[in-house]
Image (tube, rainbow, N blue to C red; front, side, top):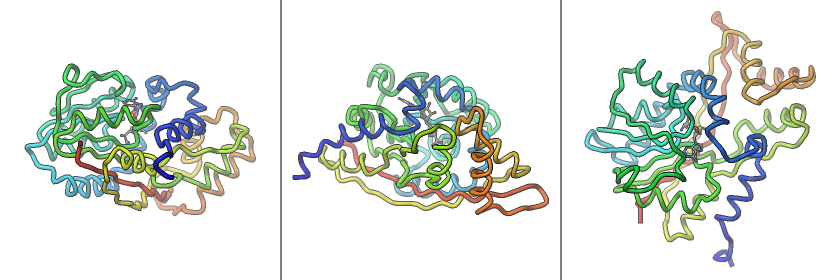
Length: 281
Ligand SMILES: C[S@@+](CC[C@H](N)C(=O)[O-])C[C@H]1O[C@@H](n2cnc3c(N)ncnc32)[C@H](O)[C@@H]1O
């Protein structure tokens, strides 16, 4: 029976009905991510240490060496790109958002990294062997937001020599905060974006038995004060005129993991992510 489940279609439906996609209003990722680039950049700096650990674990799985090349889809400000660039020969990134590219270039300069080529396009627009050639590894972290997942995966396979690897959420990130706050801020229930399970099943139907590792990370984020953390969260959630109830709800959620220090406040965030990797075919 399960052979008849159309995972590509289920993915599209789930993505289209998810709260973030509905808020974005269109599938044009570039405009949406331009407006979030600077805040995202500050965020990844706060999570740098936890990311480095994940990068090392992926490098081991993919057996990365200084001879390798990586083609990365949607690098954002370089969350994974920068640490990977120090382990491999070259990275080509495909990133539609100019704001994200600007943040990436800033991060590259700060870290003295120069082995990255940037292509300012959506993955859907990429013409294999015209825009970009085969790389050892094709990699995507939290960037498979294409409506046609199957087409995106086929293209990834066609441009990977050794491995394709994707990082996606394995459950609903920030479950409670989003579920409680979203209705107060946007007047509707929060619908999470689809998780890795769609990709895994789609791959299976394409004849690919992918490897999966579920990784739980606790990330400690430092803010100068709780008020600043609340301000950043509200900005991230695109709260235009938040009610006092929304602000109080957010504060009480953040306080659950808050530790106050001389420098401000440290908030712990738990991420449950899936690393999915497979040999292209
Ligand atoms: C959530 S951010 C992830 C950034 C980074 N990979 C990380 O894990 O922190 C998603 C990124 O994917 C990019 N993106 C969205 N749609 C894309 C598409 N169709 N093709 C390529 N990149 C895309 C966005 O511009 C953004 O930089």
